[in-house]
Length: 261
Image (cartoon, rainbow, N blue to C red; front, side, top):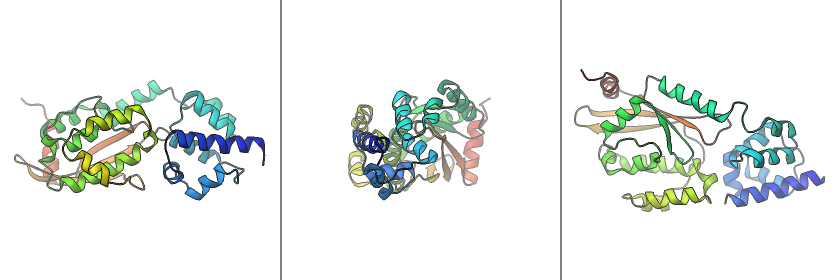
């Protein structure tokens, strides 16, 4: 076994444990298998592909010098020299915001804690109709558990459980972070959050679509499809769109798209 591979094994163990991830959790986030992670950590695997090196760096939420060091130790110094992104993050954020603003559907950008980073006008109008205004800097999980919103969702608990499972998966790499603990402390003040948090397991994989049915007096029952897209290589940037799945939803979105006279 080479010294470099021994360094990789020790570094991977240290990074994983510092983020309070099990081998299985890291494997799911990096889209590989738990035995493979175990072999890497024991130094049994001596070749790490470029693709898996990137996926592990993303799964571990590595940025800046820490990411560069990991990729160098993993045997891909050329990736380390590129930095985290080929496009400067501020410019990428501008592109992402332009994508959301140019959409014909309500859209939101959020990070892995589901913190609202940006939203288009249709998204603000939609959440106003549902009851709880959208607040930049707040987590979308608070919207799920909002008493003003949940009263309009007939199968609220089933939907909340599925959303919470996805949130747990998306934010697993931040399990030891102070900001995540602060967010959970705030969310525990919302009805039923503490109960469901104890009993809902993290989703085993990312769900790209999450349908939800609403009941509003002015529109009757209607259904929206929540479409989730993650920017490649960026665990901290997601685009969520709300698409109509029936005539009632189309009527609602048409009404909020037309400014009042």
